[in-house]
Image 1 (spheres, rainbow, N blue to C red):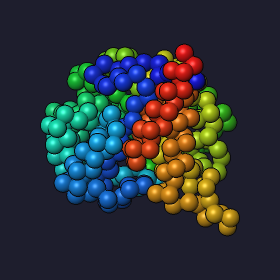
Image 2 (cartoon, rainbow, N blue to C red):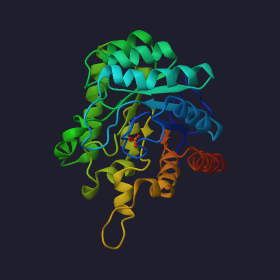
Image 3 (cartoon, rainbow, N blue to C red):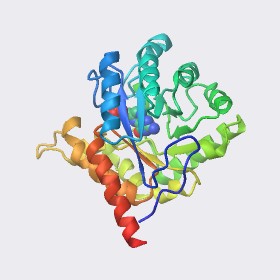
Length: 287
Ligand code: PMM
């Protein structure tokens, strides 16, 4: 069992794996689309997640579910900015889940302390400069293209080696744009150009050590992803619905925290916050 390898400037450091709770301000997200689309409901949900033990609340306004089409920049800003502003005003550590530099910049002004970019800087060439200038932590996720056709890009001969190499290339690129290496967090991008039927996500979860060897904190976002629904499929092969995969998510959280993940991104906070505490207690008992 391994403790998280790093603390990140400006973010909480409770000495255990962090818990990032998700607020998707979207009508159509992968796993909780529509539930928090209303601004007031999204703010309430963010505060509830903190009360349940979230260290960070991740606010996103664009669905990245497989096949999703993009929303416009003004619509994305309209969705996320009031929620970020209200949560930050309550003292919540907020991250903005966006691929757009303009949205990230406005979110930082509104109080976001972390930029979570599922494209790792590939979707918007201006993103790394915005992050560098604001000197905020930056989640660089492994990504091979937008959601509408990402499944066609999920071709690997060695998924762990290729994801690690491609993340290393992204780290070099964003550092070349001025991002401070101590602000970079890496994420294998479970479910993004990773196919449940090919075991890509399981291979990555089984080899978090390879990602940790990049020298940056590792964020793991397995919550309610398709590969869990497939694992738990009914006898006739029908995948388990997303919202019924929360117990399996908790299991991935315990295992990822035990393997040294720095943070888990989850939809249901309380059981996952319990799981990271279990992993931390075991680690402490081992000395
Ligand atoms: N997955 C989703 C959205 N944002 N951010 C990071 N860093 N890593 C992820 O794997 C990730 C993300 C899609 O899941 P959701 O729509 O269920 O929130």
